[in-house]
Image (cartoon, rainbow, N blue to C red):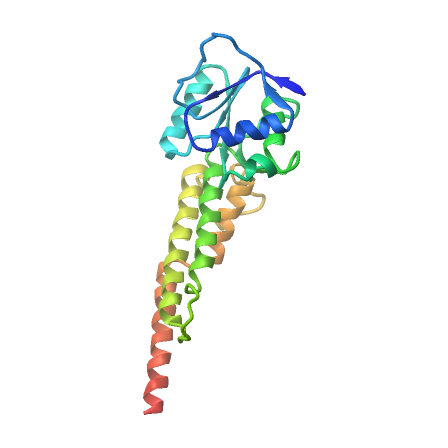
Length: 240
């Protein structure tokens, strides 16, 4: 069993699952005695000798403040995001990683141990990229689930117009999310001239750019909705 010196911080439902996964993968925490931590005790994450592995689930401003605090303390900062659940303690967690540690670092060993297999985690880009990816994936999953009504025992016609309108609304929010990420974290909206700016060369930026190019803005959706409504009205008039 490998011994890596780290200490757990904060309180969150997923922290015990992470500790069980690390122990099951042979990454036991070394005793640190009574030495106080260098960071606030209420931060959720793992503190290593040279790195903080952040497992917080709060807002973007709080994330930025923790990253700045770590820089001031001489610690590198790694952002983790994902839809974590208890089975991950046995099978490994989906990990979206912003600004991962270098190969061979103790925090890198922890990432490999937490994942289903070593290296099976996503390097999403710089800090804040992991949270953006999680929000985008959650939105896409919600859109897929919301596309169909809950099954029941009664046959009924699909209210496809209402369903389509709901999908348009979700698409608009997803586009806004992508636009906000590119504006705040990349500083530039597509289309880009070749070669890509360095700030846009990472997974989260590619995902955001794809969303923006694939989904028209709200004005285009409204025009399409009006066109469909006019078509349906003309069809109904022809049937009379």
